[in-house]
Amino acid sequence: MSDHADGDADASAEPGLRGPRMVGILYATLVTVAGAAGLLVGVFVDGLSAPLFLFLVPFPPTPFGFAAYGALTIALVLGIPLALVVYVSRNLDDGAV
Image 1 (cartoon, rainbow, N blue to C red):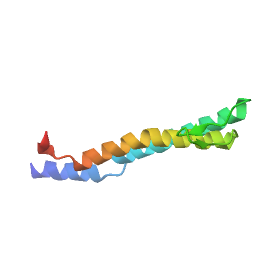
Image 2 (cartoon, helix red, strand yellow):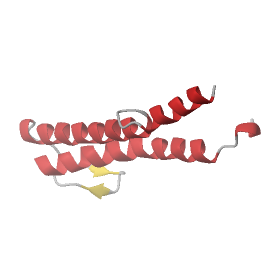
Image 3 (cartoon, rainbow, N blue to C red):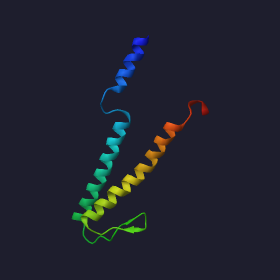
Image 4 (cartoon, helix red, strand yellow):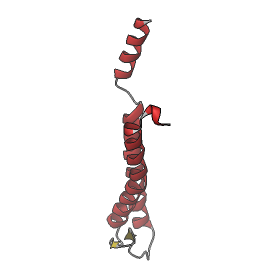
């Protein structure tokens, strides 16, 4: 039985796309895709007005302004809930339920 427990410990130490690493890669990929989408919108759509990040900070209506706006918006919208999940998962007592 102890051999099985040692095998599980070795399996979790293997590098790969599991757990927090996978979530981090997915998060970075989604932020990058949002930035690329913003860049493409800025390049191919004419007559755009300046976007307001958090309804306060104006970004220039250029392709790079839209790329920054898209990436920052998605990073914030996905990052806050992700940070809350990480905080709760690390600080929640198993017996507190």
